[in-house]
Length: 181
Image (tube, rainbow, N blue to C red; front, side, top):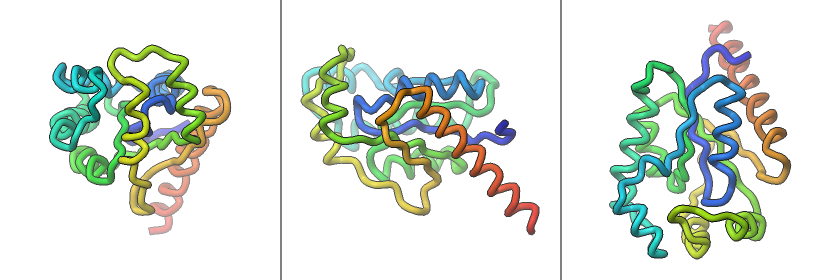
């Protein structure tokens, strides 16, 4: 059991399973889950629905709101999980500026796999035509960014099991390092 869970962002391009995995992970850990899509202002949703990718200016207020929600949960729950693409290092830095202990759960997979998933679903405002721009924007996580990388092949329950194991191991490592001080 994880006793000191940091805030978590389930990240990746559209169609990788952020909402599905985030919701299952929240349920498994007993932590509230929120979909980052719900933090987008109407103008962002309309822009994406028209097939136009968001730019950094569009994303800044959205990311700031998500960062604030991670750092200061209004529901008194403490830790929370939010699904957010977090594609660029600068976006992740903004989130960490609000919640320094943040850990990213990066869901990744082959473009063909993700494109297949997108084509099999209906999304309120995210057309499949924007997948290429998201993949082009995605910057790999740095070694200095607290994260867990997950290949999306496999069933969601197994992926969540693996994420929980990684979080447990990370907590043990921190406790072992602290005890050795």
